[in-house]
Image (cartoon, rainbow, N blue to C red; front, side, top):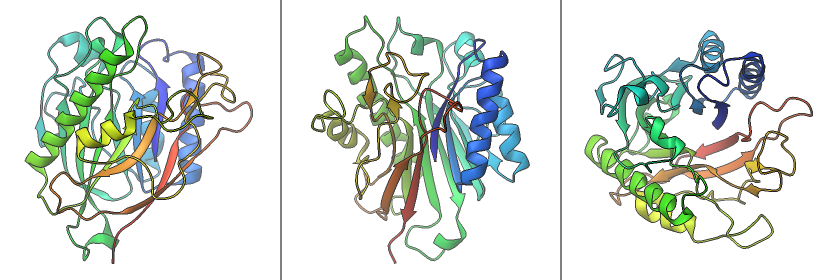
Length: 292
């Protein structure tokens, strides 16, 4: 599962954020995915309540990307370039029912200045998971690159933030190629801020997912039908602007080496029950099947 939980620094530390954290933790617990990627689980928010609830349910967890923990818990770590960015952190955490064998962190060199993203240490958590059923499969065990990419933010031109996302994905590819053996499987999950539809959900797919897949050296779209919009202003009261509706969150894979095992991935967007909106993003639940 990948889930942007809208736990922003300070503003989500109050009663509303605490309630939404409880709803998010309950939803994840009910669905019980093997692996969870949290986005916008920033420091100085109620996100810690989600992590605490899931660790009590048996999940292992990485430290937060870009946080104040320094090198503690990471096998390798690229540091944020300012104390402010470390205070906020990058908002990405991986939780797994499977043992985490290794965990690497990379904070993006590319980010758009004069946007809110410039205050956070966005990056990628690259983790090796001990998935029992994959031990005898080619390239096992499984690696996961979990990330949250640069967001669009008016009045900054969309083309400018789009270019930053492509540079960030190129950094993901660079880190994966440097760390993961070329024949090991690598999944990619998170809020990529890549709009699947060119204009709205009734239109045709746009060029952005194709460009993003080329930049990272992989695939973002599922093998089955595309999952429903994850940022849906027609059904989720927390989405602004209210009419906006598109897919921003993905579970895919990398094969930049041309030698990695390629899984079959099917995905579904999980809507919230009435009155139980946990975030402005719906989570995406993916089923990953490895070749025999």
